[in-house]
Structures are given as structure tokens and as C-alpha cells.
Image (cartoon, rainbow, N blue to C red; front, top):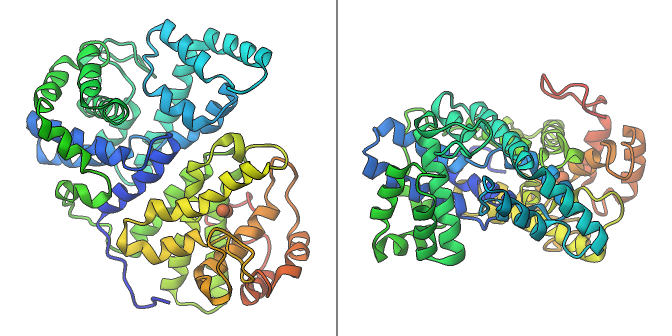
Length: 459
Ligand SMILES: [Fe+2]
Ligand SMILES: [Fe+2]
């Protein structure tokens, strides 16, 4: 499949596409980061930032939430509720004011739970207030900066992400930086994301109002003025409303000399996003990474070309991308899921495709990735495909995925040995799961080899 094909994808487009996955984790609709990027780049134009700084700003705006999955499990357990709702609300709350922090805690603590449990959670959270916010922000920003660094940026871009939640008056987190101590890019990131959220939820007036209200507290006053003057037209918000998919900001794509135009670069980026998915739940630690490497080893055993081995590895890294859109209340639940929870969990396969869909060059891989729960007899999800309708990359990833799920520890049981996993999989081989892929898997030396730094984490 596609053996001679080279992936030609603009790095700016790839990152814009993948920012849709980060939106999901933050409880925002896909397109939030792309729109925040558009707002920030309008400001950059008025500020007359140098081209190289504006290029870096583009990536910082899209990757601002790269660390977002790292605190999802914590948000879910602290609030006893859906991390997406809590996280989306967190962005609107002015944590520097205790009364607002308490109101947030009251609104978000375990809705639908028994009153006494809800009450005790509220009390705990309101006591925690600012320190809770500090810890959550610290985890997210530090991890975010690390991820941006591992994607190849150093200096200003990771720094912008690290300081995203610092406020002009020193009331922000994690370090309480003040005024011009805060990098200009971080100031732009905070204003852009806040304006986007208020615009989408409540319209143009609310966006302008929040910037005017927080001018000098959250926001750099001169930057707030630039926004207020730039957005003082119907046209600004009409243009913003047209921004959604990555290609709607194509005119902003930075033209870097080192393009991410070969498979190795895409592989590396895909791996980092696999890590972001895996960080969302303590129980899926390294799952996407292992699934990807196992799938590639199976592909090698099947005699596939190096190109197709790499492509199936990318498919593996991406396969559970949609899980970023599933609440940790479901992902981390110790025990059987209810029918409704199962349904919400199964949505992840379709979401994987929806995140990647706008990236035309990767669409075949995106489709295969979203089919990893399809089964040859039509009993899988989400499209109930049958036999050859299931893309061959998906068949290989499915075998690797099931094998890793069985051999890794889960909230409700310890991981199995490879032999125990094979015994459990065997009845499905040739019926639900690909026979050739399974045969190759059983013939490999176990534990399976993993790249340096990941050894010892396999079964
Ligand atoms: Fe999955
Ligand atoms: Fe998976």
C-alpha cells in the first residue's frame, strides 16, 4: 500500500491539524487553537514583530495546550467530574480572585453526586483554591514546554508555552511573573485564547469586554489596546468566524527552511502526539507508543516495505488520538463501563479521524487509524466494517493494540504474560483479527524490542 508515496506535508499545516487534538483535551471545540492563532497573528502584525518572531509565535499559539493531557487525570479526580467541562470552565475563571475560585469549585465539584459527597468536595476544593490552580497550571505548562522542546524548538517557543498563564499584575501561575518579565509571546497567547473563548461562547462584545476588564490585571495594557483597536470592526469578527480548519490560516503558514516534508519528521511529530495521548491517563502510559512499535514489527515480519512499516507506525501513534476527547471519568474508571459510558468511549475511534481529516496528505492513515476497533466479522466499531473493508494498516494496528491492552496493567487487572494474551486472542484469529498479523506476532521474540529509553516497560 502506497509503497512509493512520499508524504509531503507542510509542518505548519501538520501542527495546525494536530492542534485540533489539543482542543479536544481542553474541552474546547476543534478549531479553538487555530482561531487563537489567527487572533494572535493579527496582533503580531500590528505590533510589527520581526518575521522570525512571528513565525515562532505561530507555532507557540498552536501548541499552547501541548501539556494539557498531563493534568487531565488530576482535574478529573479533584473535581470528581468530567475533566473536559472543568477544564473549559477553568479558562474562564479569574483564579486570582478567591471568590471566583470558590464559585468555580461549587459549580464543578461532582455534579449529580450525592449532596454530602458534593459538599465535602466543594469544601476541600475551595480550601485548595489558588494552590490547586497553581499546581494544575504548573503541571500543564512545564509539560507543554517540554513537548514543544522535543518537537524541535528551543528558546522562545517553549518559553512562551511555559509562561502562558502568567498575568501582567503578577497574579498568574506558575511563577507569578509580572509585567515585562513575562515574554511577549506568552502575553499574546493568553490574550488570544481568552478572547477566542469569550467570543465563541458569548459573542464579539463579550470578547472585547473581557479584554477591557482584565486590561492591566491579566493582560499587558498596550497589548489589550492593540486588540481593542484591531477588533473594533464587524469585519474582524466576521473574518474570525470563517477560521476553522488548518487551511483557513494557510496565508499565515511560516515558511521555514527546514520543512517537515519527509516521513521521518512526520514520524517524530506523530510519536510526540502519541505521548500526549498516553499522558492523559495513568493507565495508558506508553500504550500508543508500544502499539506503534509492535505494529511496525509485525509489518516488517509481513515483509512490508520500509515506507509502509513507517506508515503503519504513524497509524499506531495516532490510533487513539480521539481518546483526548474522552473524559478521564470514563478512561480511568476502575470497573465495567455502563452502556452509556461504553458508547462515549467508542466515540474515540471516530474522533481520531475527525481530528486528522483536514490533513489531506495523511487522510489514508487517518482513516486506517480510526478503524483500529473494526473487526473482520463486522462486530467492531465505529463503522461495522467487514473483511477487506477494514484497511490492512488497521488490521495490523488492531492486533498490536489488543496485544498491548492485554499485556499492560489496567485499572481493573494486572497485565498478562504474552502466552496468556495469545491464548485469549487465538479464538478471534481469522474471525475478528488478522491471521497473518497474529502469526507474525507470536513468532517474534518477547518481550518485544522497543526503542532506547522505553525498554523494560513492555510486557
Ligand atoms: Fe482505541
Ligand atoms: Fe489503543
